Every structure is written in C-alpha cells, then in structure tokens.
Length: 340
Image (tube, rainbow, N blue to C red):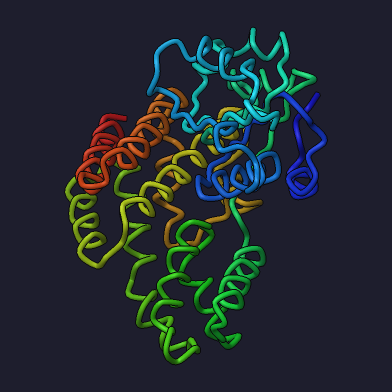
C-alpha cells in the first residue's frame, strides 16, 4: 500500500521517497491541494531546470489523455533534466486512462491534482495499489495550521499583527486555506504604509458578515432554498467576495457532506457525525446540516462535487464569467437539493 497518512504528508512533501512515477494529491481543500502540488513540483523541477521538462495539463482539455500522458512521460528531456507532468482537475475517469502507463513504469514524475476522493474512488484506489505511485491526502486546515500560515505571511511581508488581531482573523475566516491567504494578502496590502494590522482592521476589512454570508450560501444550496441562495450570492459578490473563495468553500462543503453521508449509511447517528472529529459544526447550523445529510444521496453528492470541480476549471479558463459560472453551478445544485 502506498497511501500516506495525514501525519506523514509533511515529511513526504519535504523529502519524497519516490524518484519516478505518479503522485496523486487530493482532498476537499483545493487551495491546500494546489499548494502541496506546487511544493512537489518545486522539488522535482528546480528553478534552474529546463523549462521544457515541465508539462502542465488540464484534465478534460485534451482527447485521449492516456495516450498523451504516455507520450509525455516517455519523452526524454532535451537537457537531461527529469521530466515533470502536472495534471490539474483529474477525476475518476483519469484512472482507467493512465493505469497501463503507470503499470508499465516511466522515468518522469506525474503530479495529479484531484478533489476529495473516498477510499472507493477509482483514482485513489489505483494510486494506493501501485508501488510506483503515492496517494497524498490534503485535509482541511485547523486553527493552529492556519494561524501559522497567516503569521508566516505577515512576517515575510514585514507586517506586524498583534495576537488578538491574529486570533480574530482566524475566527472570522474559518478553516479554508485559500480564503485565509486571500484575506491575509488583502490585509498586507492595506498595511503597506503603517506596517501594522490591528484587531479593528481585521474586523473592518474581514469581519463584514463574510462568514455568515458564506454559511448562508452553503446551507441554501444544500437545502434547496434557491431564492435565499441567489440573494446571498449577490450580497457576497457585491461585498467583494471572489468566486474562487465561494467555489472552494462549496467544494469543501459538499465533499464533507459526501463523507458524512457515507458515515450515516454505515450506521452512525447524526449526533455522532456532527459532534465529533473534523465535521463538528456550530449549533446555529446543526439543523441545516442534519437536513442535508439526510436528504442528499451519495450519487447526487458525487454529481454536485463533479459540477463544482468543472466550474472551477471553467472560471480559470474564462475569468470574465467567473461570477456567472459560479451562480449557475450553485443554483443548479440547489435545484437538485429541492428535489431530494
């Protein structure tokens, strides 16, 4: 088995024990998946390496992906550097396409980014059974890791922030890594002259009911309240919330729901699911979450996650239509929920 435990991920990323083959990076936190892949890419492809030895692909953008990966993985680098192929947005369909190539082996490194995958998902199963592959999970951050991330970003920018302000920032933002990065970058830009961030700065710039609006978006989509969702989305966009933040949180929400539903189907009670471990929710959302776990089927949740992943790709290709794509995707998901 080549599945890494969460506690082993940092050590592997710092010093991978694989010199060639496939590394699958997956999880509900798209921001952390991307960051982890960036670090692995930097390890295998240094700044001085041949630029042509790095190939970046978007799954779904090309026909016959299995054939394309096989060609790229077995094409030698012109200057002898190791070839690195990075594939973004992979789904379970990718597993069948590349299984033969991974079985046969190659000298390159194949970095594959995917969303949240359960142990039964084909792509994860394939990576975990191969000796020349590794499956790297990227779970949501906790308050400690996000506090460390924010502190490091402020220090690098030479901006000071007092402990109360830092604690308030993490409380406001929740446990999403990408949203935390975006908000810290906003605070750093704001403090370019003063070189200091106060608690009041955090509350004014980041605490404008953004967290409540995000929860309303997620729960309205998950419970099928289309009109409430549309209103919450309009409020979020008008206040400056980026579509990428909404999509990231939405994908995490429905990925978590998928795991909750699996636990529910296995006999766990809603109290056990919502009160323990990393799925613990605030009491104000408990009723909405219970309703969502009960009403959504595993099949519909998989479809919702796939729709969100596709929308992430669409917004990256055409940033001018990101809000429209985001709204359409979430309204479509809310419509499914209304039928559940």
